[in-house]
Image 1 (spheres, helix red, strand yellow):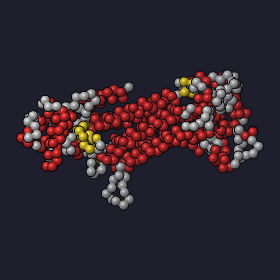
Image 2 (cartoon, protein in one colour):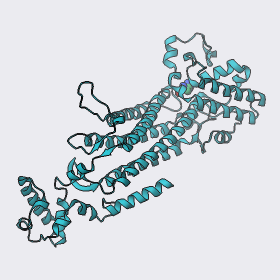
Image 3 (tube, protein in one colour):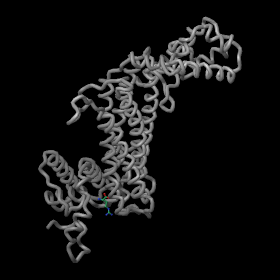
Image 4 (cartoon, helix red, strand yellow):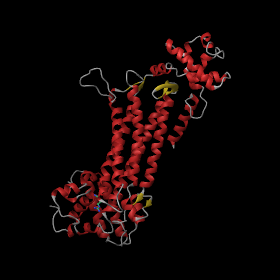
Length: 459
Ligand code: ARG
């Protein structure tokens, strides 16, 4: 049986089940690199401040470097009796270098150690996620540029509403992912505070140099209050919230693609590489990627609720409950990474059935608002125009035709303001082109959106 690093005060060994229950090594081994980096910086700081000798420091630093290499080569077997990644690394170090290894934990607690490991891990994850978001935005921009002229129905209540372009539609998602990128950037700022050197909760009696640690480990700021430093998990909550919002955006996009790929819509076809078949129905081609992302969104919400619930009643400072913070964060980080990656690949290989989109836009009276606006331009009050066009729609529904299929004589029965120019004005392309407000679906306005997005991407 391995000896516990905190065993001095105990007369009896822990129960085997207790070891298993108490251990976090099963999941926190993911942070082995951060733990070793943190310890290396800590040893250097201790030597620089004369708290340990340079000789001990050198042994610790090279011992840790060797452990890192051995972990990556699969040569180290983590032990449940050593509880977590921190004590696993320290125990192996001491087994290997003896005395010097026992000096590493001077002026440090696992409470500030785990906090610094976790923040380092998250900072790296945030940067990867930011890259993936940037690539997704690029893919969306590619779709937009290729579909400036692709006309489709815009919906409200999933009922055809007004004609828009596909470029406009996808650029709406561009805005959402842009905000997501900004949110992660913001989360990074608050994660970038160094807790190391805060000790268990009250600081330490050694004249440590936390500024040096921050520089070694690439932290912008120091946590100001040691008690806050070891009990704060806001950065993780923020990360999980940002993941949830991002996944919600992906999920909405996925829902569109599931609906659009149905034969009833037939707006898109997914590439075979990102679809699956049925074990019984030979004709099936299912949009599994989109459905899975939609499903995994629920997981990320669950992870967020898990940590919010863990934290809600904890007194200051560290409580063991907080060990449960890692699985949900690791899970959301992985879920977000793979979802972003595969969604972007799927989007890049999607085939848009442009003819079907435009045909759908030409049905369902998507030009009714523009027909009303036409009458407004002839001097009638909008409410009156709304009523007239409503009557025309009712009439057309009975005959199964569109407004543009009525003759001028028939239109004039509803209002004598109609002239020959109405047909040009209510064509779906004219409806799109006629939009004037900033941020509209007009071809010109979307061109501007694309230009701004490109400028922003180049930055
Ligand atoms: N494995 C622990 C965690 O992840 C490390 C901190 C333990 N601190 C303590 N006071 N027992 O939270």
